[in-house]
Structures are given as structure tokens and as C-alpha cells.
Length: 82
Image (cartoon, rainbow, N blue to C red):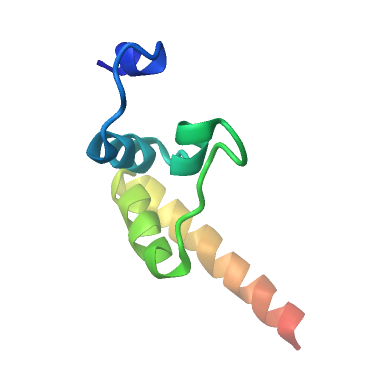
């Protein structure tokens, strides 16, 4: 079906457009028109959910590493604010 959409044989329904956009992080506008940034950035209110979904995909050891990196970034950010 994706191939047929891509080749213009069938029109992409709105629900498939949203699914493709969500699954691959691709801008719906870019899918529709081919114009603008290909990758979409989640709106501020959805960023935490987005990061959480990515985080859950890591194994526990990698999650610990990511948490360590985030703590380091927080310290650096705190120093820059002062």
C-alpha cells in the first residue's frame, strides 16, 4: 500500500498519513507537499511523551547511561544560567 501511495496509484488517507508521520517522525506537511523540513519536532506538550517512548526502547543499562548524560546536561545548563 505504501508503494502505491508513493507512486501516486492511490491517495493516502488522513489516518495513514498520521500513522506514517507518527511512526517515522516525518512532517505531515512534507509528506503531503514535499516542501519544508522532512522531520517534525513534537510540540512542547508532546515532547515528554516522545522522549519517554524512546527511553522505553532502551535496555536497562542504556537507560542508566542516558540518565547519567541527562544529569550531566542539567548540571551544565544550571551553570550557564548563573
